[in-house]
Amino acid sequence: MKNKLRSSFNTRQYMLSSDFEVFYYSDRNFKTLNPHSHDYYEFYLFIEGDITMEIFRSNGESQLHKMSSGDLMIVPPGTSHHAIMNDPTQNYRRFVFWISKECCKSLMQESVDYMYLIQKAEAFHKYIYSLSPAEYHQVEYRFLRLLEEISSDRYGSSTARHLCLCDLILTINRVIYDNEHIDAKSDEVSLFQNILSYVESNLDSSLSLDEIAGQFFVSKYYVSHLFKDTLGISLHQYIIKKRLAECQSAITNGESISKTYERFGFRDYSSFFKAFKKEYGISPKEYQTLYSH
Image (cartoon, rainbow, N blue to C red; front, top):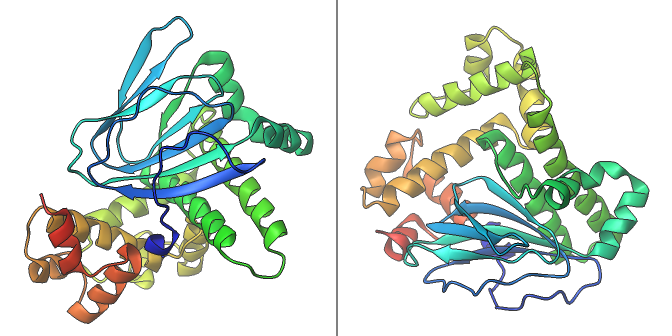
């Protein structure tokens, strides 16, 4: 699905829309842009690549941040910034979301809850946050939903786009707000994080819903709802995404495709091939040929 929603990059740094624009970029041999600023707000979710973000303060001083997967950046109007390409040969993937000041004012009339991060960026010059894998998947899911709705012409698409827009902005604000206002993790959050750790450590096993629920002595229905409510996807979908990410990393580094898919829990090549092509838009062999180091 991601490949279908991919945007072709251009150097335009102004909005064509009066409210918002959203992009999913995947580039190779990307050239560093000159420092620039906008008259709108930019939200940026980094996925992969080897870049350093440089953000300039009003006094001319700059701060450098080596971007890691899951880093989220919010840049207010008038703040100069650019991405420095450390290794242009690496694939550079990110979500970019632009929203006008007028659209923000309109949303603020609905609720001030949409403005938490924007206000922090403007008042305290706090621009970059690091998301956990679970938080990243929550935000990624909302980006993809918005992109998918924009690309469709179904009945009620205008209303659906607004709902997706609000959901994306509120989720981004909520994730950061919760991180900054938690004194102690709830039992539910602890359980969720423990399940994520268990999945990551046991990708080579079957990892069925029954097995995981039994491992943590909870109902499988509870686990199922926990993942759906937190990530917007099922436990099975999360496991597939995690396995594919590990396979993608391994084959990019030159490992054997046949050994890789077995090592990370796919029982046969056919199911691995279908899942990989659905996620990345091309076959494992094509991906390895394109992006191998």
